Amino acid sequence: MDSFGGIKADREKDPEKWNKEWEAYLGKKFKPLPSYPDLSFLSEFSPRILGQGMLASMEEQRKELCTLQKDLAGLVADKREGGHLDSKWLSMSPETRAEYILKGLVISSGAVADMDERRQWCPETTTAFLQRDGGQGFLDLLNTILDTPNGEAPSEELRAEPILVSHPVFDGIWHIGEACPPGENEAVRNVMQNHVSLSRNFYLSFFLWNTILNMYGKSQNYMAVKPTTSFNESLRGARNLGSSAKEAGLSKADGKRVIQEAKNAYAEAERACASCSKLSSQLPEGTNFLRCSKCMGVGRKVMYCNKDCQLKDWKHGNPPHKTICGKPYAVPGEGPNSIPVQQSSGSSDIPPPDPGFIRSPELVNQIALLQDNPHISYVLTQPDPKPDHGVALQHPQGKMMFEILKNRAVRNGDRKAVAMMCNMLEQSAAGVGMSKARLMLQLSKEYGIPVSELAELCEKNEQSTDIEQKTKDIDRLAAQLDASLNLPD
Image 1: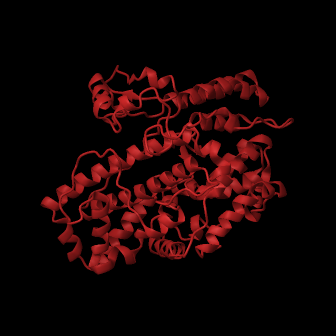
Image 2: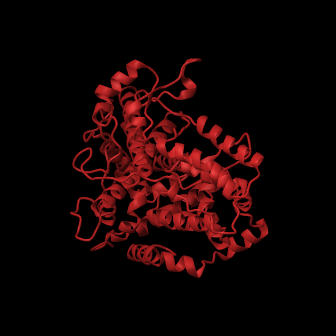
Image 3: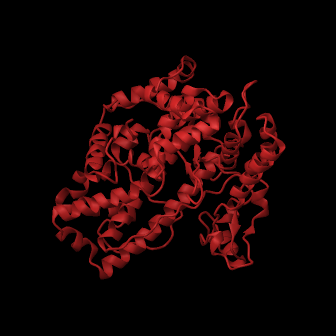
């Protein structure tokens, strides 16, 4: 099966072919057009897009990008002062620069699941763009992201908002900077525009970071801290797990085991100080995070490693915590709470099982993980000591399609829906070292489908008539977008 965007080459085994396929895809996708399809189809999904889980995830993306750009600025300031970064880059042969560019792309795309899906919005990550004018293209991109138009040492202060690099075709596809036309949901439009802009700029910043580190013979492991989940949704997930186990027809012992596993997974999740980003595993022995009680009351879990960090975040946080304390997440707009938002119901995102369908213990556990982590689309589970991985699909149409398929699958175990989910998850699984066979085994256990039958359905990649009916509008609009951008099938 083709991977994202029709990219067939293996990133690790044949990186040059992988990147050529990516550049061909980006070249077709980002051809300028007189006009672009509207975003009216997004309104159909407003409950999920405006839910607290999505908004919490986007807020964490914003903070994470601010921190990454601060770290990138510190690295560049150091190398421009003592390492002559710009002159070193320009004096290299095109072949040497190409090697560093390729390695930076490979490292960035393989860092965590779904980084490739972020690259789909980054036409600047082609060799032609980065190598133009003898390598000046790479430095121009770096200077734009760091706001150093003349190549000066960048400010190393943490910004209140990340720098978002514009691109005329990207802005056209998402109608950024345009007035919201009548008939479209402005709040939904703002959230999706911010979401894809943050995803795109994180990839660009992360690519620059890895490429420069590689230039100086260094590397740094990337560890994604789990975004702050909605605490009320997590509580609901734990409370509803018992009834879900009962509905699934589990024995009392099996139900207790699944519940305990879900609680342990939630309790052991790495959290970070909202001020200094220190992880829970880095706290002195015998100490715990301090929690903001007002934020807990609205479903937000904000923690600090000590009183000093709490006071610093209250006055000088990003944003100052005193401006958002006790308030739910808001849609991006003119002010911190300019557009009303709705609370996500958490458990309502997962439909109850149809009569006669018995959920397996593995599926009950998957549902509990999804309820505890509303910002992710699915959890790839692996045997110890390998870690589990949450998949957060980035492509808007693909994400919406996956949600429809997942709801059908958890409701009645629809085999064709599970097969389509398997195909959609394949690239994310490969990105974290999980084989297609292992992915099919996980889904086989969760939905009770023999592996051989699932493999055959994945190969056929057929869609049921009912799913076609439910997704015809999404398919039509996605096809319209792809056709207008001259994308490959």
